[in-house]
Length: 180
Image 1: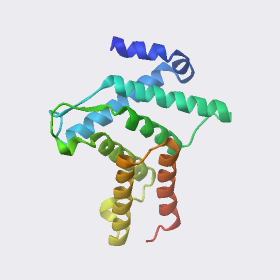
Image 2: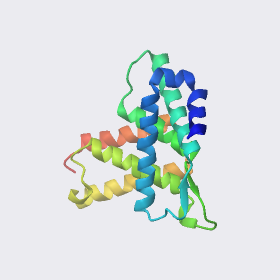
Image 3: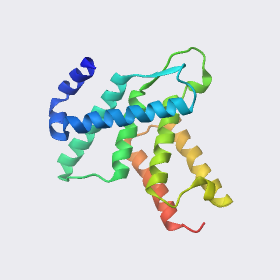
Image 4: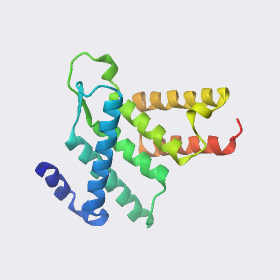
């Protein structure tokens, strides 16, 4: 944990603006999300969470958001922008590290985590989306979105801006056609 403290200190201007407690909470929350994901996938013996990659992703996220707020002279960012910047850095840093060789199903494990993390975000912000309650056509549309989003995470350049657009597009689709 002392080495993580060094990382906090190297981002001193950011931790001063954001608050060290907020950074620590984000680290603990994300670390727990990773642990929950790894346990749900039954891969705890095959992967580990690299705490240094995770804290760097978090600090890079806070750096970007702080600069964005300063540049645009705003106090708050919307939840879609926040999520997009966070997952873009998690994708770049790839905190899940594979411990075993030749595990084809683990090649995109970081992207799979991001997909589950993002889907959890968009389905909990829209209380009306419960997968089991969707009509067949809505389930097909939702599955199509998930497949396309996963493909994008794996094979495309995932800037924070493109991720924000994807998340906002999902919101717009649900809002514009709630009866589908």
